[in-house]
Length: 117
Image (cartoon, rainbow, N blue to C red; front, top):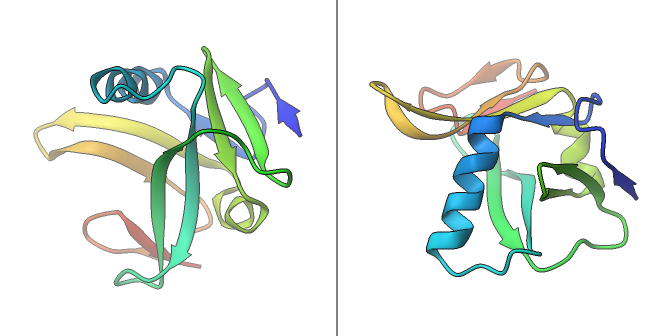
């Protein structure tokens, strides 16, 4: 399942985040055709935590979203919790890293890497 319109409700990724992912792929010799897997797993101080990692190819049941040549792979279970989420990259005074703005999160921890629904 492929969707090139990244502005759908599934998940959004900012230009800044796309550029950072591309930079990381380049610095770590990750092949250009690999995608970024975005997911959710149980754990963290609020119940669920976000996961990010590079993957060679999508699984058959993955939702695939493309932006500026970057593919995002999201499994169905994670997509349920990530619908409407925006992935961004912050390099400001409050820290450097990827941030998730998730409208489904009833509460988040102080670091922003875990959430509850």
